Length: 129
Image (tube, rainbow, N blue to C red):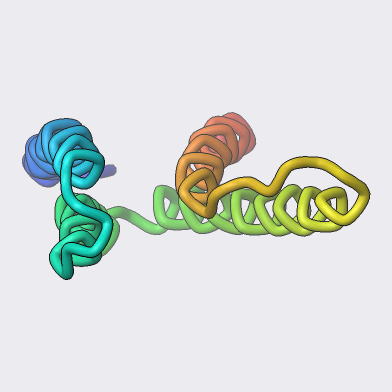
């Protein structure tokens, strides 16, 4: 059984990281749009929204280390599902770009992986009930 305090700590840390992300991302986009194209600080500014994501990953890794074996297996299977489907989708779309579909930004890969991880978690959880 999973530790309730570990779960609460994870949710608190993860949600704080996501709140920071939701604040930092639009602010950095607005500042980038408003800045001169030659400004040297546009590059670090464009990467500042990665910082809250690093804290979210840190929160999950700490939580993962406190999970029991079944929960770890569920998340590893979910991650494998997410990785495999993301690989197929991104590779397939990359091939379709050569026949005229518009090129997409890499920014969409993380949300795709995250959504598929959620789906994979639901599938794996159902399997172990």
